[in-house]
Length: 435
Image (cartoon, rainbow, N blue to C red):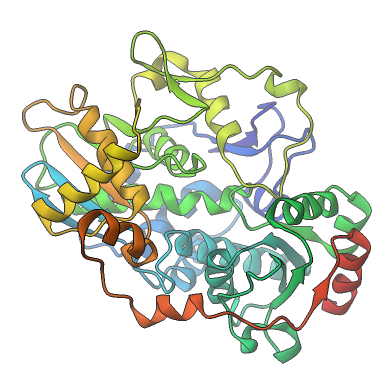
């Protein structure tokens, strides 16, 4: 297994380096370049293996000889104390639910795993680190849960004015926790620009050991890959047909994680998703990543504050365009398609689906030409708890899912204890207080 830059395959890194220092020196993003035969590993995964055991096995593959199997197991078992769930809706349709974590967001898996990696690697290197993040609430909820009780980590979290929520006072640095939440007197875009300015200040990055926990960091993508393997172990004895996954495009992390899984020998015939400005259809109705004006190797350094795996997807398509056109099947989906898909899932299967899941299902319906042969199986990926989209579901279906208490608490506003102006100098003052 090789981990190297999207812009230069010779720019390799160890697993721990790719996690701790997540931007390669050439300014790209770290991505996986699997080498070798991984089928024996796949055959060792059984239906009775827990999700954390599957994650531990795959972590061993990723770390090769860098760490002992005991370290891989410790990372996975301590972080992934919750699991996806999969259920059959009809003969050819399954629902893979990724919202059974503590906050009901699929990112719970990525955050928990990544923070566990951080803790172990920092301890081994005798380092501390500060995570820089921008949140309007939901991001902070997953982060707060994942950081509880962790050592050697702090998180400087920027909230646009009036959006602070998703955590409790016990999570804050001044009460012995690991979060340092600050309200910035600015909007969302300015907060991201401010975080980007901070993270491009190399002197401050080195002085305070700054890094990120969004999907710029490859550690956030790996649990997406684990979930695909988990789903396969649960259905492999019941399904004897082509398998397709339907997933919302989001910031391309779930698709990239699926393609990683395919490269690691996961039996899958394709990934169905909705078209975006970047991932579109060509004249032959095949997937294409829109040609960038600036080639990967000539771009400025990736923006660590603004998460997206688009560059990873571009690199994969550039390396194997013909193969990936036969694996990724986008569909043009509009709001009407999403509404009809949401209604069908509810009326036909009794499933409340968030808007992202509804778009993924709408995409699967539109690409029935690809995944519509007799006996084909579609696994619909439901990333977030439907209660997070209660208003939209009620609008489409006339009913809405119950709001679990753990989700309702995330929406309670928190009174800011720290307020700053949108200047890096004020952020540095916060960093001094975190130390």
